[in-house]
Image (cartoon, rainbow, N blue to C red; front, side, top):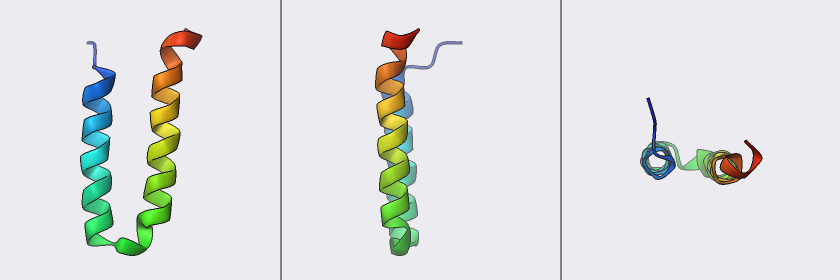
Length: 48
């Protein structure tokens, strides 16, 4: 099963947005986790 990276990033962005709306104090953590996951997913095709 192939999952498109752009689809995964879009879903992650929606989840992050909902978390920030529900708990605004999580903003720093949510942004940091999102950026780390985004970076790893963008670099992964070049590493493998």
